Image (tube, rainbow, N blue to C red; front, side, top):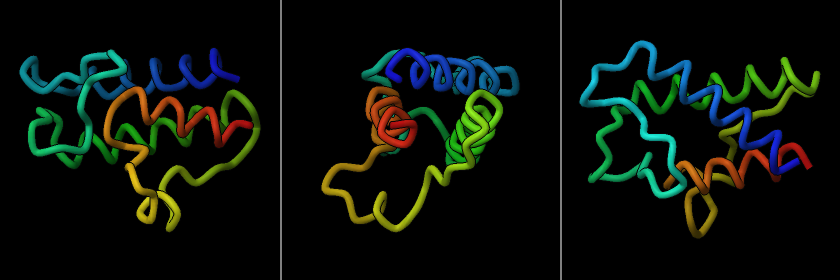
Length: 95
């Protein structure tokens, strides 16, 4: 599932980056900050990324999932902090 999760996040980043300015493109690296004051990614891009992830999961697996739910807000560390934590979250959703 790890390769599938990585593939989904990679595709979602590419999709979102198509509409981003050069300064606000999402760098596809596990350390890239997504949900942080230091992030160059605005809230609209983050929402688009999460929607793209949900859609790609459904397209690739036939499974309908919700990426953002109550448990994500209650988590000690947000699954949306970095690209790496998002990928790990997607892996959990696929498992």
